[in-house]
Image (cartoon, rainbow, N blue to C red; front, side, top):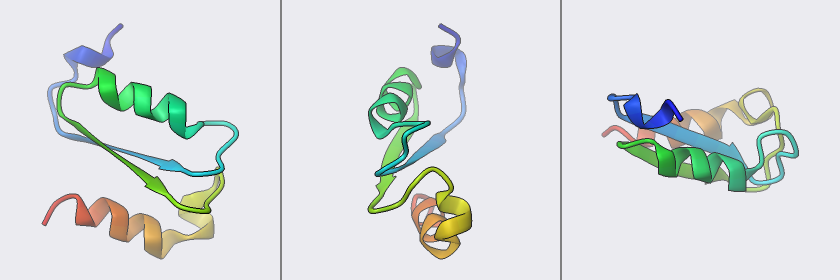
Length: 65
């Protein structure tokens, strides 16, 4: 219920095969935020930042040219 009150741009990044923070759930979170982008790291799992740090960094940094 508090998500619509977040007044800053937010990047929501999900891993395609994450069984904990499923992409479908993360997409709903992004939809609830007033200024959010949603991206999925293909073929990644729950620990994507540890498993594929370069791709996660490119995804996040690419959101802000």
